[in-house]
Image 1: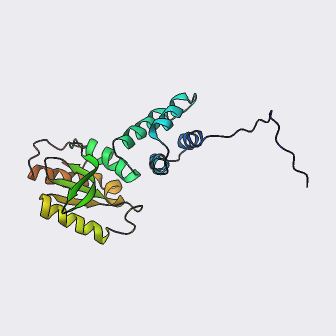
Image 2: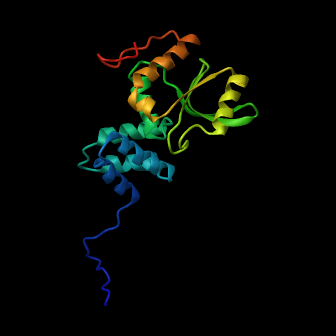
Length: 198
């Protein structure tokens, strides 16, 4: 079989990773899929600013605003669809204070990273997704939670996908209760007419 090399005039061209990602994002079947694509690409080394640049150059992108919103959230520490939902469906939707995301600090003689920490209130939220916590919290997670209580006097609330995606109002109520017990003077608000948080 004879192979014919492509000519310089060939209509085929090489697509960059950013171009491929943006095309996939515009066709993603759900918001969770779009968030998963962006966060996975960033974990694998693509830079949010290079993705943003490609989004802004794309002419007929249907989901431009959504993709830019997802990118902004990743720059604030959102690393998964679970964290995106917590930020939007629990915190924002119910008027909770914004947590500090992916904060590194030394507790009990070792460095730990908290998914969501409410600075000044002594409340930490850990979001146990399947990527980092397949099946359940690990023994190291539980030791870390205990160190946080014993050394820093903070409580840790843990949630998985069914909690955040299935019962965001109940999660918001628990987080608000913990924050209020530790000095938060704000008020939780209803996310809609059928909200179970208030």
